[in-house]
Length: 59
Image 1: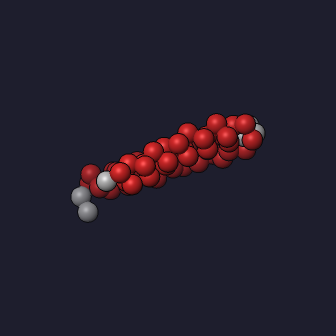
Image 2: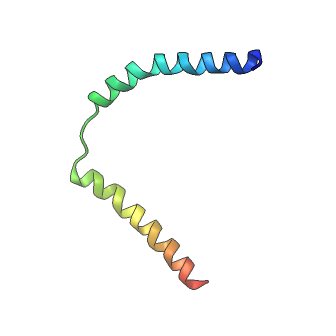
Image 3: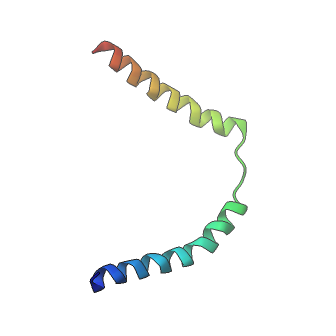
């Protein structure tokens, strides 16, 4: 291994050590999604999936 790879690994480990506590705090303090929020997500995804299926069927 050369010094660039070793430095990259050390930088990635330091990033994980720095980010993990903040990520844990953010996951504990996020608002829970309501059914209306989930429907706002599911309807566009279903529309895209339906459109892709339509395009596949037309070929």
